[in-house]
Length: 133
Length: 385
Ligand SMILES: [Zn+2]
Image (spheres, each protein chain N blue to C red):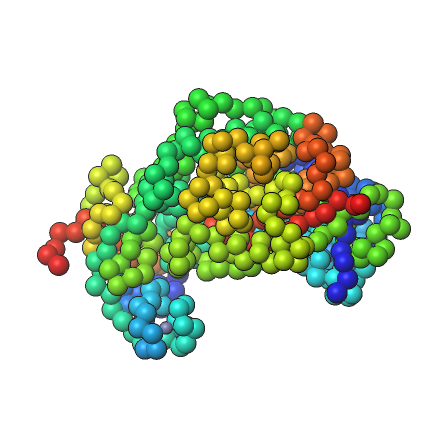
C-alpha cells in the first residue's frame, strides 16, 4: 500500500476509528463520510470498542502476492457490537477452533511486511475474547 | 429511445490459449461476429476487460483492439467493471444504439489470464474488492465467496453437497458446447471429493480461469432486418450497483444489485420470472448461483439451492440455467464472460445451440456479476417472431 496510504489509514488500522451519523445515530466502519442509512453527511469520529463476534470465516491457503509468507491464515467477517461488519484476519487461534458466533476482540498485529517497499504495516486482527466486557 | 437488436455473434473457444495474445483473441471473436452479421465496419466498439493492465501490462484496449480489427479511427473504449466488464460493455453498446448516437456497434469481451499464474493473478482478481479494507487483510476473491457460502450454510442449514446440482448441471450442459473448456460430466461423488481450495469452497464449486473472447454486433431494431441473419432483440437491459465490500452490505446474503437490475429489466420487457425460458447466470461459484436465483425471483430467500437439488435448473426443468456450461464448465475468462453469456442466449433464441438447445426458447435472461455483487448487469433477450 506504500507509505502515504499506511499513514493515512493509521487511525482506522490501529484504533478502529470510524464515524457516527449525528442524524440517525448509525455507527459506521470503515468511515465513508456519507451515512449509508440516511445519506446525510456523517464525519464525526467514533472509536469502536473492538468487541464483536464471528459472522463468517475461511482459511486462505492460496494467498495473493505479498501474503505468501503468512499462509495459511484465517480471515473472518466480524460483526462489531456497535453494528458494522469488518473484514479481518483472526490471530491466536487454530482454524479448527473457530466458529460462527464466537466472541472476539481486536488486537494490533503486523498485517504485511513490505519492508522492501519501505513499509511494515500494522493493523487490526481479532482473537477469541479474553477480556471481561 | 430506439429498440436494439443483436445481429451477429462470435466467440473463441474458452481455454488456455498459449499461442494467442489478447489482441488476437479479440480479433477472432470480432471477425466472427462481423461475418455472422454480414457487416464490414462499425461506428463504435466497446471492449469489456478486467485484467489487461495487471496481467498483460496493456492498458488502452479501445484503440488497440479497434485498430487490430481493421477499424482504425472509430470510437472505441475499454469498459471495466471487474468480472462484469463484458455485459457492462454490451450495456454501453445498448445505450449508444438506443439513444440514437450510433447505428452499428461491436461489443467485445476479452480476457487473457494465462499470461500469469499464482499469487499475481490471485492479487489482480482480488482488486474487484476494496483494496484498503478487504485486500489489506489478505482476503482473495475465492475467499470472499467462501465467507458468503459458509454463512449461507449456517443460516439456512444447508450442507455443502446440496450445491452439487449446480456444477453437475453445468458440466453436463458443456458436453454439447464446442466452445466450452470442460466438456465432460461430473458426478455427485466427484463433487463431494474434490480438493478443498478455500473452505467450504472446493475445486468443483469454482469456475476455472481461462482465456477467451466473445463479441456481439448491435443495431437499431428498425434496421435489423436489413442484415443477413436472424436478429435477436434486447427487450430488457439494466445495470445496478451495490457497495463494493461484502461487509458493507445491509444483508451480505442478498444480491441487491441482482434484484435491482433484474427488476428493471423485467419491467422494461414487461415480463416476470415465470416467462423466462432460460437463464445464463453468473455461476463463478455455486453459492453465487443460489444467491442469483433468489435475488431474481426464481426462489425464496435461502432456497435457491433447492432448484439445483431438485433438478429444476436442468434442461426441461422449471428454469434451465447455464445451458451451455456456464462459468463453471464453459470457463470464466472474467472480462469476457458477460459477452459469452449473451452470445449463448442468442444461439438459444436463434435455435442454433445444437446439442444444448432448449426447445422453443423465446425469452432468455443473462446476468453478469462484477466482484461479489457490486456491479450486476441483467439483459433479457427475445427471439424474432
Ligand atoms: Zn444516518
